[in-house]
Length: 314
Image 1 (cartoon, one colour):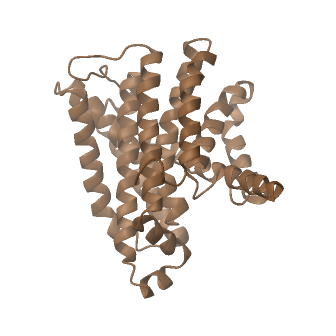
Image 2: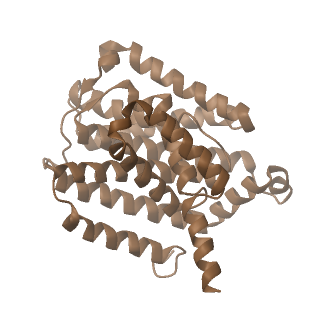
Image 3: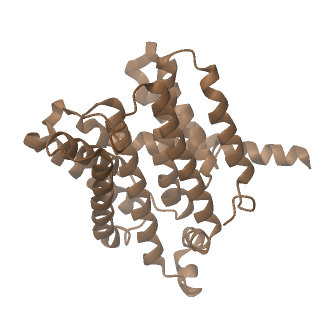
């Protein structure tokens, strides 16, 4: 679809403009680091939003795919000397195959059964990464070599900012085009009613598996970038708390809203930095944010604000 005609064009242009201007407003490397983490979380949340917001399929284990991508990049580059780009691709392929294999049985579940199934998947991944200490370093984690592309190694937060920004824009573009395509319409039909969708000829299982695999691959690629950027990873990257944070970001920003996923990721990545004096209560704050959103903004922040703006325009 042409960038001039696709839905969400204005939002994408606004995002690009923000990305171009933002470095002028960041005073030091600490703020660049926060913005880079926002970009990485946004990438994962955009894929997760396709699964939760558009297809209506909950996942409480998506951080597991993030962790697999991170560890594949770390292990293949540090232990076996692979190029970073090849390690990222292999990690994404493995995650794609794994998610495809488990998608059919797990996507047959619904409601809280589906939530428990994806939760169990995430727990299994975390246990494997923790127990296989010879490969992963165990609970202490492992260092990750620097990222390189054809011999060029990005150095410093500014360069990484532009790399993550480019991947974020590409992910937003992919999401907007997918949503506007027949696949997107099929996903919305599945979300509305699986029985009605099947009656209309939609292959429900096919599209549920497709979006699950796509969101897992996006999470894997983000995990690989995270590993090379931070230079060190632990099994916590695949943990239950991380999965809950990702879901909370999607719900807060607005399910079935690509830019809502970005907004939710930005707010909940910045929030812990603002609440450092209440560090011990960070998880309580995440829970309170989720409860408050569900009560007062059931559609999420961005859709609710959009409705208010459109109402005033009328």
